[in-house]
Image 1: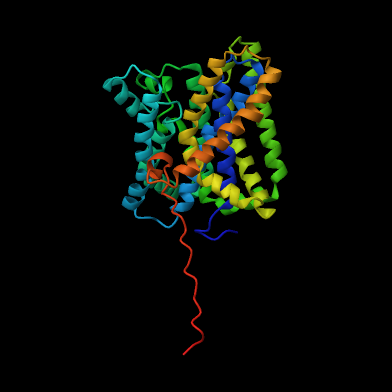
Image 2: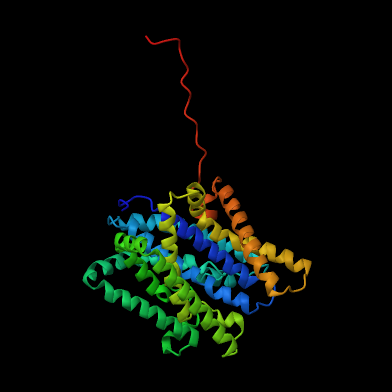
Length: 373
């Protein structure tokens, strides 16, 4: 059992794996070639990265606020490390799009998180921080009914995902259903499940350690279901691969809960084996927010270079391995390197959402004086 306040090493591995899925998703979805059925099948798997991040956010917040923090200090610190990078990167990506530039367009993108496709996550994070005291209070007052709350959270997420996928007409809420990305209620089920998992962390960890094969088998079954549903939507319903692999659909919610649990199992197995490469994993985890912020800009440059070269579309049997085994690691590693360099500059907070890493000053050597007196 880990002591309260102790660093959770398995969370580092979960974060590293999830960022890898994020980059993989963006590489596949934005490749300058028409996506074939195999690529869409992998996209429907990689789409879980969004939901896993919200589960992880709630899990970590529950653990870190277990001692009833001073909420004003909590908000001050959390917003400092999210709002500042959000403002900077909104400007960067607004300019990177190449215009035409207008104040109306800029403020629209600033308010909606649409300066680039990944910035919605920061807006939702701000909303989570705002209501987090209420979430903690809800978990406390329903402590005798956590199974019921869990069932509600999962059911809500499944139904809402279906509403978005099918574009239900919900009257005054239809605008939310048509554009759900930047709104916290769109991820309410994930936040509640993550908070419940954090509240019962020790029991969850113990059960997962004892049933790793069950967890991984369940994850494999969920992913198989996701791919099967995707193929049905392509071949039976006639949907294009990108439409059939959208993020808001019930099967992606099922995949997300399963993958998050499997990542936890991987993290626990890793810690039981002595956390090999712990320094690398810890550093990558610490850089993950910066990698998340920076990688779309690097990917944009790479895509422009590929487009300028004008290659013919290769077959999926060639394209898919190149994207997953070469481009994804390249973007991940270069983003990590850029983040590491940025962390050592005065602009670290704005660029990476983390405090500046200062060089360690070696302790002065003791100079012998010829004896003691």
